[in-house]
Length: 177
Image 1 (spheres, rainbow, N blue to C red):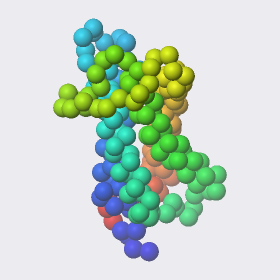
Image 2 (image 1 turned 60 degrees about the horizontal axis):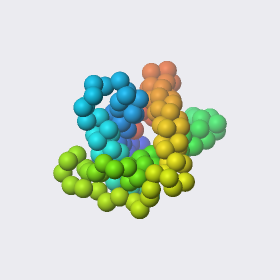
Image 3 (image 1 turned 180 degrees about the horizontal axis):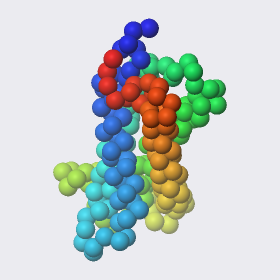
């Protein structure tokens, strides 16, 4: 196996870090928006970032399905590999469910939905009283906390691999071979 096969390619790394930063910013906005001064455009920015995450995640999923990732270190225990893969699958699912649930909630509202004030985004044909709207609102809140916990755990695991285990796990996403 060549050294290049032990690292993610440039596109995968760019998508990972771009989406990661957008998700972290959006989780923070989601947690603090009620405490910001009135008139702060936190929610329109939150919605725009969510739509960006959705679009980039679709591209990332296609890229991931067509480009083999580097293998996990052979020294990793079976439960560690299972946990890592499970968390990645759940994070991928949340990268779609979170923005879609927010889009459904926004579609039921009276305010326009736009992408960073550049263009309007079409709304789903839903009303505030529709069951899907209430489910989306609940899911968005609960899964937001779940995603926060998974992101913190993901970061902690990467730092554990880098600083304690001193293996190649984090380096695979930091630099090319």
